[in-house]
Length: 303
Image (cartoon, rainbow, N blue to C red; front, side, top):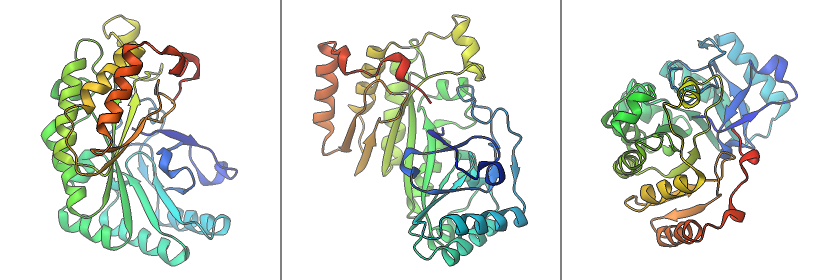
């Protein structure tokens, strides 16, 4: 799931619609090599519902790179948008990466969103080639580890397939940043969502982990279930308790955790597993003492 929107001064000629990127790509040059999301079925997401998916032409991509080079010639990081640009043919991606490192002399890293089905469509050899050519980090929306939740939100893969996708990125030597959504199972499936997600993340062992909190927008199919009373959303306190249940059994080697997105009630950060104990103690204290003054007010939350 995308995490922040960006509109640049040359939006009209450079971007089609609103562009979303991870928080860690805030200072990156964003190149929109695809438009929309090929999957575009997730019920919690409305970001690409108004876009028809397409791959930009070779000429469009060359023009984008040229415009980006003219505006930001010393860019050190570049992010390839839209929602799942890893769906591009591997040879085209390799060509784009070669152009980028040729045109931007200070370029250090190229990042990209990777949907699980698009990752699985790449062979290990293809992912290795992308790593060698300079792809640095892949952002994977895991969302949940519960098979029921994944099916309900129409993610399009099973937990086993999600694990394989994440492991394939890590095995290629690429950095992997995973995103999960607190509250995605609602009240009914909260525990299953928490423990299933912990299991799937432990199996993947990502380098980075980001937690968002569910905020269905009117254009998202899930919104209708919420308004109809079929889907019961978690309260702020229930959301933090779910995060505790997700983090407590999590077993990772060395992972940077963040819950600093605008949708979250409480900004948290930790290096796992080294700081897991302190993170859990913080959650216990805040929830146990109902320290509501530390929570982000509802009207300040956003996507």
